[in-house]
Length: 390
Ligand code: SAH
Ligand code: SF4
Image 1 (cartoon, rainbow, N blue to C red):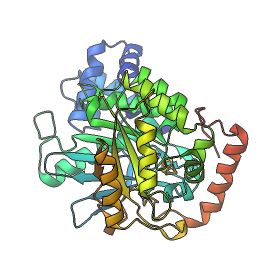
Image 2: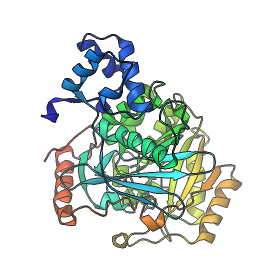
Image 3: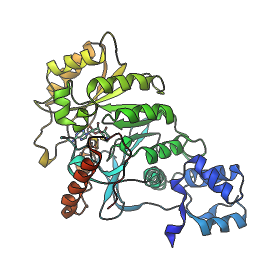
């Protein structure tokens, strides 16, 4: 029965206007609805007291605001909070809140598993299960904002202090391989009648799906982070299989093109520090040559991420002194470089540890099979928007 109802979390602002239009309602009703849902956290139409009773009743027969099922909710000793969310069929994804003095950042997932299969990432090692819907993507922000407000006793509504000031799409999955739902969710984040986040405070992280970087620049430019992790193609091929399809020269060109649309005037390059693999001074100098090439420089910042180890990877984290030395080479060349603090380790919420520990491990084989079907079906054309249904 519920499936016949439209989940309003799945609709971007324009679609909500169209949905109201189908019910014979004016566009401003969509704005009111959006405010109730995304600013007050309301899921029950009966609560939406400035809508006519007849409309509330009509909505109840056609629509629903379907919350995500939270399987677990843990807070780390450093304040990092991680929710594990059920997305059906034994799959779970993670959402992580990282509080800092001046901001609160939510890290959200866009896919259950990931088909890119980077060597250093435990999400990739699980295989690919499915794309999240836009309702499941924005539903993470909705769930987290109002759960945080509740814990802190902050009132719902636009007057209550916003708990989440920044969003990063750096959880599980490759957002640009789940393009349309991701962009719909981004549009809701940016909308003034929903979360009203500035484009600069929303960051999408990608392993480098070149055609989709261009498309994002046209459709919904937000701050862009690119997972670089290597200074030359041979090394990047071995760490991120997608590099064979979109090598560094193409990726750098896409970054330059994106900057014409981007809300920030630089790209953030993420670089996971892997002991003895990509962390020598030679690699740092190669990176400088890559981003400061005379013909085609890429204005950028580097964010060095200490590798978060997991048992099957066979990789280890670079020692701190190596990370510092590597950062110095970049900084001496005038590149702004930060080293990411590792947070939430004790609850497995650090980057690349988002593996969904309650997942039914026996299904890993099945997901790996699905991933290879995906790769056979689409070859290496990861730029296509695809969804494999089981
Ligand atoms: N698929 C996207 C976004 C999710 S991954 C991407 O790859 O960019 C978010 C970030 O975590 C990426 O920079 C990724 O390379 C990094 N990461 C993945 N596994 C990691 C690990 N084990 N340790 C540290 N960083 C990791
Ligand atoms: Fe996928 Fe990103 Fe993990 Fe690579 S690092 S496997 S693209 S989630």
